[in-house]
Image (cartoon, rainbow, N blue to C red):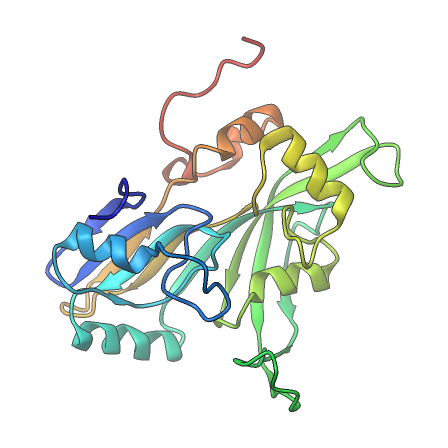
Length: 256
């Protein structure tokens, strides 16, 4: 028996199991994280009561919507749809600075080698992401070298599924995701950890695709984790988040 079930079921039918994955949980075993013993795949199997097949993946520190197929045939169908860019994903990210109101990041990415010991030159792959800025805040505090500090809430859609595509694209844009140890900046990450807790401020909040059995349009939404609530309220961003993506539960009473 596994520990307390960390996955929350968002949708289920004869073909699919859709869950919310918390930050900090791997989707499946990985050579990079050999010490880990708990995986979303195992919890999803327990939740479904049968074998499940991961359709896509979320990085360990990324929370949000995760889809499992209940048969290998459905997994293959959705895999082909993803390869054909027929699956739309939306993410929310909290970033450093103020990006433009909207834009497209067309920045090819070098593929990471599967084996870190592989020194061969890796191929460069096309990668495009569209984004729009939903909200901004300027704090009257000095976190880094400026007397005030700017952050923004960004909705971003990757058109491929390159490894760490959104993290690398937002870094390329000059607005790294807060809590990103590799792409971000230490003073801002430490400020976020001290103020709102440790973690990557990135979540998958929506997926749209044709149902693999019926072909009917399917739109799936995932509310943000509860850890986003203090941030959204402290920075006045609650109403800037679509209601389907707002954290569930009671809103905090600030100042209490």
